[in-house]
Amino acid sequence: MDIEVLGTLAVRERGISVTPTAPKPRQVLALLALHADQVVPVSALIEELWQGAPPRSARTTLQTYVLQLRALIATALEQGEGEGEAAPAGRRTAKDVLVTLPGGYLLNSGGGTSDVREFDRLAGMGYRAMDAGDFPGAARLLREALSLWSGPAFADVHGGIQLDMETRRLEETRLCALDQRIEADLRIGRHRELLAELTVLASRYRTHENLHGQFMLALHRSGRRGEALDVYQRLRATLVRELGLEPSAALRRLQRSILMASPETPVVAETNSERLVRVG
Image 1 (spheres, one colour):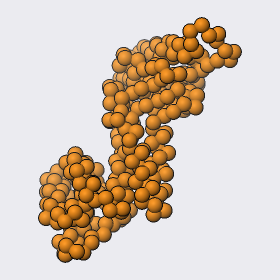
Image 2 (tube, helix red, strand yellow):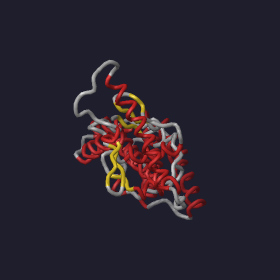
Image 3 (tube, rainbow, N blue to C red):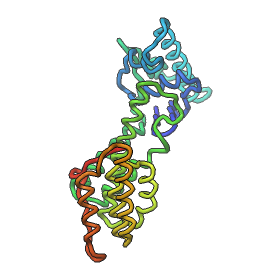
Image 4 (cartoon, one colour):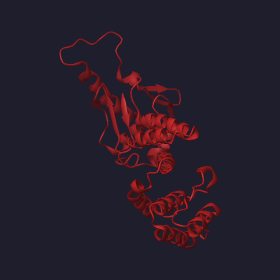
């Protein structure tokens, strides 16, 4: 089974889609797919579908959605065997793929692919490369991890409490990887190449201090010190207006370094661990 959730939901068994179009079964599959090979409690699925106000028939209705998903899986399994081919002994059935267990359900991926797992694997390798000082390797690995995202997680699924929470968690992991990838690119001198991307990111995440600090560094190192200081002033105004906060001490030090630096003097970024991160 191949699973994609970092964008639109796509779940395929033997290359054939088993993703339903109906909203409720789609929610069930999305939550099972995200936690593939793990038991998802019935209580979590009910909370996802009815957000704390389940009908009396909630469990029966959930079972109906599971049966609908199994019907799609069974069709994919049959088509995947090829027309005219005999079914092999011991082949997987729909109940082997979407398993009923005490207290919940489990989507058995059968060793297939998952974009979330691949993202976590590549991002973890990228973070370790950063820690080892291998900035070109870190930039490459983190860029590869981020390329798995085709849009917001579960972009075409109407999420409830559980999926909304998971979507926020996944977005935070994406932002962390993005922050580290930009950091790695700055370390290897790609400041000019980053300017267009950072312009968009600073506009989208208007109170994210790390991204604004990276934008300031990229501008300063590109000989655009005035614009770097303007980025600081816009961020400060936004933080004060929307959150009642001043920029962090790390960002204020960066601003002072840019103010005092001559055009020939490099401004060195602090490491991410020395910064205060605010995500807006």
